[in-house]
Picture 1 (cartoon, rainbow, N blue to C red):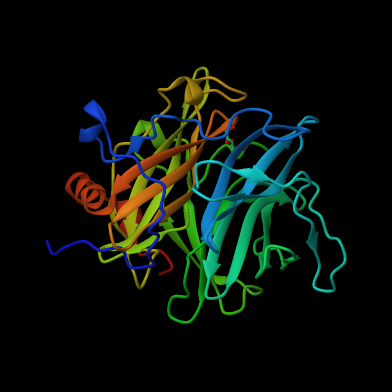
Picture 2: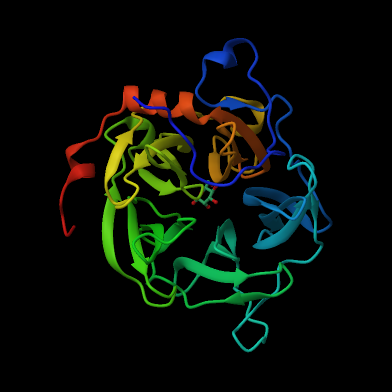
Length: 340
Ligand code: BMA
């Protein structure tokens, strides 16, 4: 196999910690000082988790799920010099319509932040006659303009690819039922203009493996590599005591991401530490962002833990991708032609 490369920008200040002890054998290892964001991070916000960050200017910027003290989630802007320590705006992001009039979702959670060309896009879960996807854009992180809701209800866990493919924007999503979405597989949709969406394709189904047998959902924006798009996603197991959310990974074809090239049959990370097992919702590790440095191949994954904290994990692209390829099991369902 030829050398595996990340195709993307350099992030020389990417947050990083070498693995120690037994972690050295893991394809994805935890930051030792997790969680990086604790409870009550700002007045009136009880918990920040399931959030997404990107490099910006000489530091980092992010969109954060903040569950307020009344229990309702909103999206908050945060900034950081080193991507470990974050400062948050006290008020939620003000979304407007195209004319600049306030246009706030009733609630908004699990935001993903993706840069395509010179524009940053935020996708989140909101209400549109039930669970659905919100979408907004910004160029300066001062004004945030909402775009059309991309999909019909019910849908969750939408995330854009960080570049157009064959001339179109591509977005992963997870159609489901409303409420706590009791099932779901990952699909991909295309749009020439981020308004009209179509050419929907199935990407991958919840697994035969028990850790992801209930539902799966796109996590971080896919990372382009020489082997394909590296996707960190969440897989959910429905136990007698409730859902357990783990982190998995797959590699999608670069030109046609509805094709799964490799899929790791085991989770890469599952709730084990106190901040993953204990919290507002126990047993949740939920990836929403991954930063990748093209020069070193280092990857930093941001994941929400127990719906209470933000945590970090690290991987080396080459070792992680070898691991996925060596262990890969792609099922009939993932390769099925369907409408393709
Ligand atoms: C999902 C979403 C996530 C959350 C998870 C576990 O339905 O609400 O934000 O992390 O449940 O509670």
